[in-house]
Length: 514
Image (cartoon, rainbow, N blue to C red):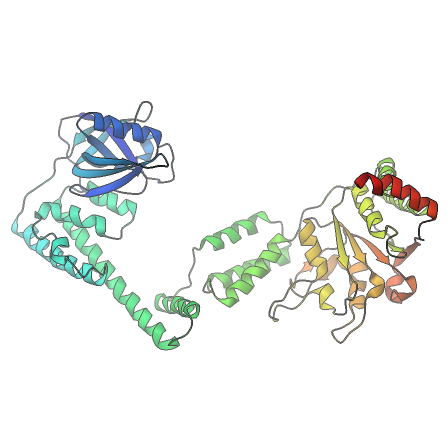
């Protein structure tokens, strides 16, 4: 990784600044923004004495309170030239780096960060080979500034022609595009020849990368001419994929999807489909229309309540209390609902005929269904079927269509986040048959306990079990319900309220809300 570091026997204790994401090289002047209290205290300690301070990089920039194991072993000693206190409490400090130093011991507690260090003895020999190499580095640096950094003024000054060969690499390194670890490796090298070689190689790599980038840009521009910026960016990504011969991976959203896939208890079929779609997504440009379609589909798969169910409460007294609190009168209706729940309690299951509440608007059909859901401890979802004439409203649209969505059944389950809600199919008597199919026929599969455990939405294209869903229906006129649907239902008629019941409802429910 680097050659051995030679230390002098001299040991010095200095205030210390742990830096999150910067490696400071000797002979450079750089501004720092200091915010951690112990770092600010270390800075003030240096200002109160000879302004000398030791700067060292953290191995992990995300660590807020570094320990000794989080710090690299080589840093830089320098002077604080000036500071500026900012309104948010941080300090902007101008630091002049002077020499390398090895970290021996640290103190990371009150009152300030400090370190025991020993200066690093650097080789300063300038044999003919180093002089020749430094000349090549200077020439390449001038070319690097023009082609990569795009500097057009003051190049001779930036090229630091007058800098001594053993210092040249330290002056150039901060301007190169290298990650933290590579810069730290360069800092730890004491052989000036090796430092110059690494800097020289890095400039050549960046120049070559810039040439490839320009080549790709020219190819894309030749393909698309004067098209929109978004399309241009997508084509550039495709050209990069073609040049590299591989798909783009490692995206943050890809990792997030894979994590969600591991945590979601999908069915075996759904998991296979999701994994296949994620593999396709990995090979697509992230901003393309195809990628957005795949992402939407995977989101729907992962958001479905595959394994989440609420626990039923078969407490008949509590159920009766809830029904009486929300509704006055309707004694026979309540009695039938309590009877329905009692049978379910006895057999341990709510499977049975689907209750359909029939009556004029405003008699409490929807609120009765909601009260049953509350009594059972189930989530409640309402699906309005009035005027629905397209089968796709029930089964969903196929993904080949632009703007395709799942049907209302799947949308309702995703919204309530459980696979066993009480789902109210409101106004089933107002379903109409149209040129887009017969929605009442689609509902037959949904309501049939022998079929709905393998319900397949056209959008999801994987089976989803609806057998745990408790379906309630409402209608205004029983005769308008399609006969095939009515055969699967137990119709309970609700009449309008009497004058006495209306007065009681007014006093007990409406006036208290005024």
